[in-house]
Amino acid sequence: MKLHNEDFRVRPGEKVKLNKWPTLVKPVYKSKQQYKKLLEQQVSELSALQHLHYASGRYAVLLIFQAMDAAGKDGTIRHVMSGVNPQGCQVFSFKHPSAVELEHDFLWRTTRSLPERGRIGSFNRSYYEEVLIVRVHPEILRSQGLPPAQLDEKTIWRERYRSIVDLESHLHRNGTRIIKYFLHLSREEQRKRFLDRIDEPEKNWKFSLADISERKFWKQYMRAYEACLSATSTAKAPGYVVPADDKENARADRLPHNCRHFQIARPALSRNRRKAAPGIAVDPKLPDEGRRRPRLSFRHQAQSDTAISSSWRK
Image 1 (cartoon, helix red, strand yellow):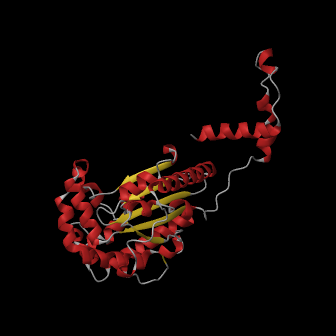
Image 2: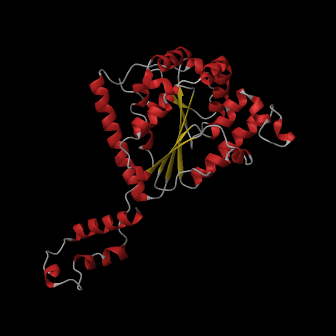
Image 3: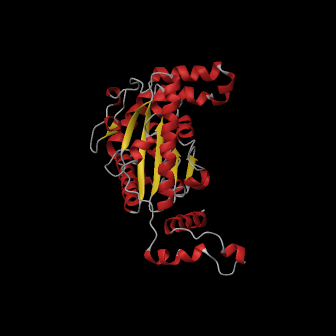
């Protein structure tokens, strides 16, 4: 089965009801072998896109992953980004804000970690936590040291949505392309994965009593995600609701498809650099044996010059 990613995209202005969005769809693979081959193709394609993106140096790409606990954010990032050159990507995980971070506005700590042009940045959780967990637990909001006028829960979420949309619009205007993924997990599948964390020794370290206590707020979290997705998925920074009950399916055919529409071109040599290229073929300061080597064709000279430029960027 071929998944059409646009089927999982939240349209601007759409009112999201997550109980109408699937957590499980028919797999795009028929066997484990086919899945591995598909993932290898995807990683290879993303690697090529990242190489082109890094060489161009015109845009930054920001991938944001949000989900309930045990939905597979870590595994998705690890598998999909496994073939990407580490020099061209960055991964940041945001947990509870520090005392220093709480002294600033809610967008400050993530803004410091935005990717540079030519790089792909992945956020495992993000500034969206400030309209998700903070909305479910308003006591967190009251401990953030905000001015009293900012603590009105009737207006603060709408204002924060506006701040997020304004930030993402600003980033888009300045060359950062943003794609947001909500890994949509069912409550029953989360229960199974929590039990696996208890039963399987290699997963024990993932188990937390706090995760169990948060299950009590499932309905509140779903309402918070619905409001957030409805308010912040835009044409410039789209949000996708990815069925996540099948981990392998959730990882398949996502990122490369969504990155293909980026207008990225491999940089070409300027006229001045082309004129200078023939001088690279033979250095008059070299000994005679160095000057006797075959003269490069212009095409090979251009490739050599591009390689030198690429190594300089590194």
